[in-house]
Amino acid sequence: MDYQAILEEIHEEIKPEIGRGKVADYIPALSSVDPQQFAFSIVTAEGERYNVGESDKNFSIQSISKLFTFTLALDIYSRDLYKRVGVEPSGTPFNSLVQLEYEQGIPRNPFINAGALVITDSLITHYHDDYKAFERIINFIRDISDDPTVSFDPEVSTSEMDHGFRNLSLAHLMKSFDNLDNDPRTVVQTYFKQCAMSMSSEKLARAMLYLANGGTDPLTEKVYITPQQTRRINAVMLTCGHYDASGEFAFHVGLPGKSGVGGGIVAVVPGKMGICVWSPALNKYGNSHAGTLALEKFVEKTGLSIF
Ligand code: GLU
Image 1: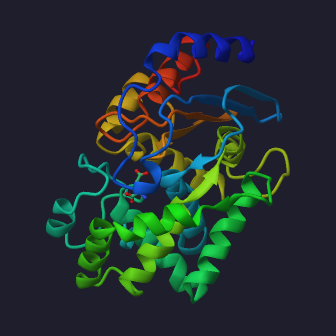
Image 2 (image 1 turned 90 degrees about the horizontal axis):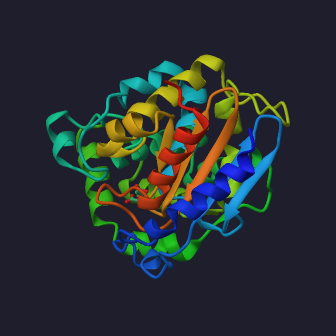
């Protein structure tokens, strides 16, 4: 299949949609991002790379980071992790407090904010302090993207901390239910740093390869997790990766995927490739508007849906 030609066709067709929607302005440092940007990258299990648009421009990965911390925590705690966080779609917005109250501090899944906070908390506990936990997170992301220069943007994490009242509320609520080991502020701060990782679409597509290949990087042959754990992560991505629009994404795209409010969406074609699309303007669910449509076009043109 001529992937380069397909990406170029999608880029052309998607142009009228780029910029439609709204950039995430609840994080002030993200409010000034130019909404007219777009990139689409594919990295195959054989290491072939295909790109269109601004595929080497770094953006804030935000919730895409939840995938990487989930991977690390699953490797450490195995199924004990599920005592603290579930694997059911929430049907609620990503930062909702309501469900957490009536489900007694156990978040529905690792991809809503409450679940991701529990996961980050579990890493801080395991590594005994927040700096070591963050160092592990950043090194893991460097490893899977095969790029030692990948880093985070302190301006974004500080900006989010200055306005992080809702995430602090989630952390405090879970602490009150005894589902947080560490200081809520420390957990939220570490979580904002992982969200502020800055990467391009090409790097993120590359970083998805271990999830496209049963937990082992097909290019470096490093083993990160088991094939069974990989299936679990991909299943949770499919059912919970787009918050309360996860059903829609499965319906229209049909690939395990994870979005972030920086406008990035990563996806996996099992056995074949890692994908990342980026366009900062978001739809009402907090997912990239043009990115979602571009992925829909991609599966229509290639037939590469898991269904
Ligand atoms: N840092 C963001 C938050 O907690 C992540 C949300 C997202 O990307 O969906 O609000």
